[in-house]
Amino acid sequence: SVYGGFLGQTGETLLARLGSSANTILSGDLDGTPNNSGNCRHVVVVGGRVKHLEGFTITGGYAVVNNQLEGTGAGLLIVGSLANPGKLDMLVDCHFRDNIALKGGGLGGEYAIVNMKFCSFHRNLGKEKGGGVWLEHYGVTPGEDSPLLGIFSTNFTNNIAGTESPGGIGSAIAIENMAANVQIYNCRFADNYMLGTGGAGTIYIGDQGTKSNTGQGHDILVGHCTLAANQSLSGATHPGIYFSDSRAFQNAPKLILNSILYFNGGAAVAIDSNIGGPGGTPNIPLVTSSDIQMPTGAVNAWPGTGNIMVDPGFVDYSVRSLGLDGKSPCLNTGLDGLIVEDLLDLDDDGDTDEPTPFDLKKGYVRIAMPSLPIGAPLPPPISTDMGCHERQGYIPFP
Image (cartoon, rainbow, N blue to C red; front, side, top):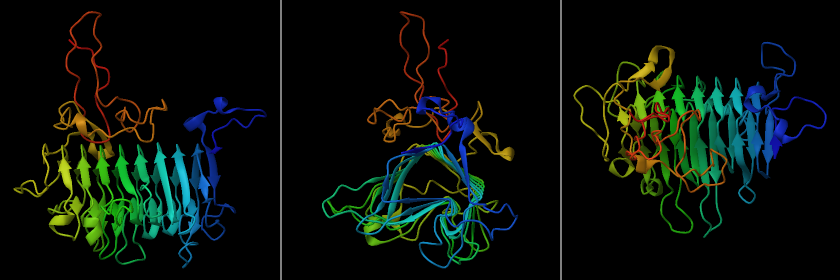
């Protein structure tokens, strides 16, 4: 385990860490010049298995080399092989800024897997794929349970993919050929840009193969996320979530739950702008209790219930304040039963079977119980909101 965020004094313990208020900066800009000629290719490299990496701002990596490994993961590269995959069990409170690679500007890896919470990816560039994150080719031993690839409570803004590759994918996240169950939860995606003819997806999830112990497809879940103001330009399409097609992948459960996908792609909104994929009916995800923008006059194109197609009522979309205002139709309209288990233990209480307790910023609980006088009758809890931000907290019951 490796931690940043210390004061730099002799004899400090983990309890003395300042945490996110004073993350340790790791910079690849070795010569301080405005160009990237003197920057290192990878600011941090993880090989084999690392249990915990927490409390760093990672910036200035420049991995633009026509080589699958050397051109991947400018901020953080996770190195693995088919026989010995790379594993980062938990990435916490790490912030990736201004990193450039061919694949995975902020974080990348082949034969690698990671779980992360409370991180951010800002202004990273994947010239071919994965402006923020690119991961590919994680495999498991036949009969082994498939692992979790979890991205929880993480913010993706102003990342770009596809500047030098027609058909580039995933301005924020690109996941390909991963034998893993993917959960992207409590995350915010805004102002990410996908470029190039054939390019697709702020979130791109490719062929996940089949579970080695059951033969079924892997589980794909995007829950309590907000995607807004993401763009596909210069011939790219599908600025929201894109599921690619393969026979094995089409049989995988694909779920979009309690989420908001709105104002992506500019003025021209197509039926598949926010959720796309070439696979036809088997590739259509189940969308439930979500707000998905559709063309005027269109009907709900996705199987599932509780969906709406109206302006979500952000606090101030013009400055990307994507919380919900007091009149938002997304307030209290999520489905509590779709809150996923706290698999990454966001509240650090050791209980990973409980529902995920709070929203993106740890500011508001997902299911709020009003504060009552002793002996007062207990009203039903206030339902969860759609999207990554929860407006309610502990609200006094009148």
